[in-house]
Length: 601
Image 1: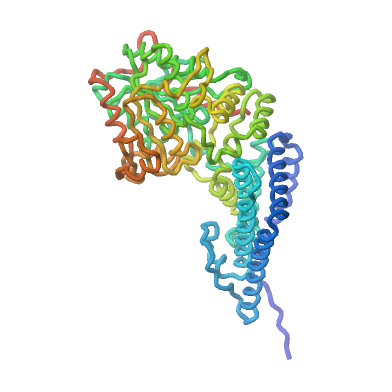
Image 2: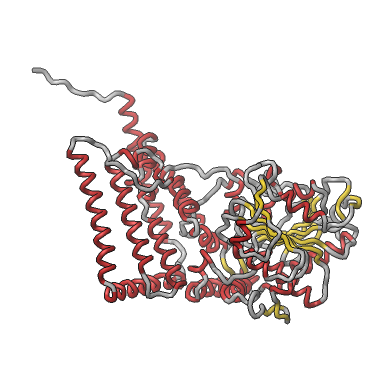
C-alpha cells in the first residue's frame, strides 16, 4: 500500500499568502481603531438618559400587565416558545433526513435577505427565521403594553424597532452570507478595505461612527454640481442672494425668490442640469433669485428665528424689489424655510405690507399638532438633551440632525450603507443626492430651541400664536394666493400634516398638489424623468383622506402643473434682466461662497 503526499499548487499557496497578509493588515488596523476610539470626543449623556428612562417605564407597564392580566402575558410567552421550538424541530428533522438543506420557509420576504442562501442554507435560514420570530415577539410585546401614555408608547415602539433593526443578522459578519462570500472571493481584502473605511469615518467625525454615504471626491460645488449660471448680488451675515442669468429673451414681470431650508444647502435644487429646478425655472421665463444661507459657527449662538426673517426673508425681498424695480415678488419656501415663509407672511399681514404676491410651499409644515414619526424626538426629556448640546456648543451640529433623520429610515440610511462600506469593503458611490445629503449645515442655538420648543412642541403658530419681533404671529394671517406641494411618501413632513396647515390659512386662492415619492425625490422630479406622478383636487375643505380619494391623478412631474399656476400670478412679459444693477454689482459667480462652507460643529 502506498501513500501519496498532497502538494499545494502555486496558485493555492499564493492565495493563502495573500489571505495571511490581509489578516495581518486587519490586526494593524484594529490597533489603529482602538486608538481612534480611545481619543474620541465625550458623548453627551443627556441624549441617552431619556431612552433609558423610557424602557424603565415600559418594563413597569409590562409587569403591571402581567399582574392584572396574567393569562394574556402567558399566552404571548407560550406562543413565542412554541414558534421557537417548532422552528428548531423543523430544522433538526430536515438534517436528520440526511439533507443539508433548510426547511420550507414561507415567512415574510425582506429585501435584506435577498441572498438565496438565506432560504437554502440551513445555518443562514435558521438564523434568519429565529431573528424574525424574535422581532415579531418583541414588537408584539410593545403592542400589548396598555398602561402607558400614547406618546410614550409611540416612542417605545420606535426605539424597540431600532433595536430590532440593529440586531438583524445582516449587520454581523458571521451571519451575513454576502459579506462572507465577498471575503472569500477577495482573499480577505474586502475586510481590510472595510476596516479602513470604518476608521476613516471615525477619524473624520471625532470618534463618532457616521457612515459616509457618497464619494466626496467625485463632486465639486460649482464644478460639476450647482452650475447654473448666475451671480451673487447681495450678501449679509445671514445669506447670499443669487440672481440667475436669464435663459429667455423675455421674462415674466414679477420676480421669483426661492428660500431653501438652512438645515441643508440650497443646491439640492441645482444638482445637475438634467434635474435642476433652478435651471428649469429660468428656462420657463422667470427672473429667479435664490437665497444661500450662511453655515453658522458658534459665534451665531444668539441668532434666532427673528434674524432669519429680518436679515434673510425681508432683506432678500427688499433687495429683489430694488434690483427689478417691482413692488411685489413671488416666493417659494422649502421645508423649514416654508414654515418660516408662513411666519413672514403673518408678519407682513400685520404690518400691512403686500410685498409678497403669491407663496409656494414645498413640503412645509405649519401645523405641528400631530408630530408623527418625530414624536420620539419631541418630548421634553429629549429636547432637554438637545438644549444641553446647544448650550455647550452654541449651535446644533448638523451631524445630530443628520443622525436623527437617518434613524427614521435606519435600514436604508444607516445599516445598508454600513454593510456595504464596512463588511463588503465597497467605496461609497458617486451619487450627487447622497453627496448633498452629507453636506449639512449647523443651526444656531437660539434658533434651534425656538423652532423645537415653540413650533414643533407647543405648536404655537397654529394655536395661540408665535411671539416674534413684537408680534404674535398666527397661521390664519396667511391670506395670499398659495400653492402647497407635499409628497406622498414624505417621512419628514407628512403630506396630511402639510394639508391640515394649508386648510387653516385664510387665502381664498389655495392650491394643493400631492406628488408621489418622498421629501427629496418627490420635489426634485423633472418632467424629463417621467417617473413620479401627482394628484390634484380643488376642494380643500375636504378631510385629507377624502381629498386624496377624490383627487385626479396626473402622470409625470408636478413642475408644469405648478408653473401653469405661477404663470397666472407673474404678470406680463418684459425684457430679460441680467444679474445685478448699478447699486448691486455682482460680488462673485454662483453658487457663491457661503454654500462652500463645511460644518465645523
